[in-house]
Image 1 (tube, rainbow, N blue to C red):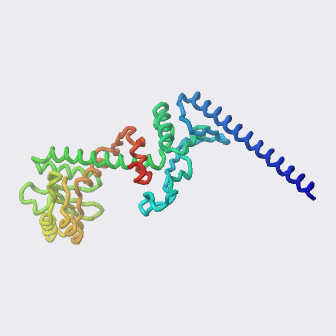
Image 2 (cartoon, one colour):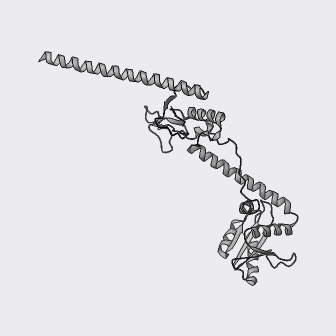
Image 3 (cartoon, rainbow, N blue to C red):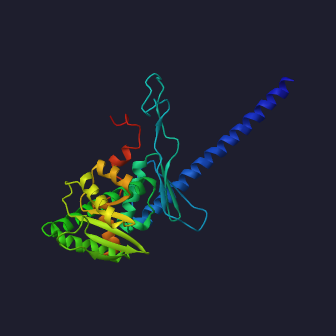
Length: 308
């Protein structure tokens, strides 16, 4: 009986040793293969990859170049994501690697900073469009586009204001031209005794009246101006009323216009209409590569107490 148990023990030990040896061989082979693939990538694209980066290859022949960033979190966290100090064994968890898929290669690292640096190096060498924007880049790109668009609108409205500030009648003609391009038939009222409105518009058998004010951006249109237009329509009985300005409207004016059916066109809206109807296609805003992710951008996705 003891001999049988001994033989069984020897057999199990032998099997365990063989499995351990096989596992060791597989790990060594995987490391060697990964090292060779890593060297091949570096030679092929002329980019040095830091230690800790693992490189593999796709099995399929169809490739899309993109990256996915993953960020760590505390094993035990407070509601705001910061470290819960009540646990002595608390630590940052890197649950998934950040990954770059580039042609036939799959590049992985626990650090999103490293993946972003590799992506940046490849884009600088082969062009911005060589790798699709990831989720974080796309969000930054859209925010920059929005900021640039707002800036361009402000610049455009300032140009209009500066051009017509000393000649309100030319501004009325400018507005008339804009609305004609929008499909309205437009008549400007006489320079004197305009009756409380500047433009008479018709479209689809409906009649509209409009008042135009070329004011600086800080000089908002108040409720009395809207009341004057509404009063003028008591006689005209137009189907709709429009108030156009290069500035903006006070909250009181907005509320009153909403209750009386007056359409308000402020500087932002006017800039949009001008681009669409007077300048042809909308201007493509060039923000260069400002949407590249920086170290500070990435830190925002970490728990806020990591870099304190």
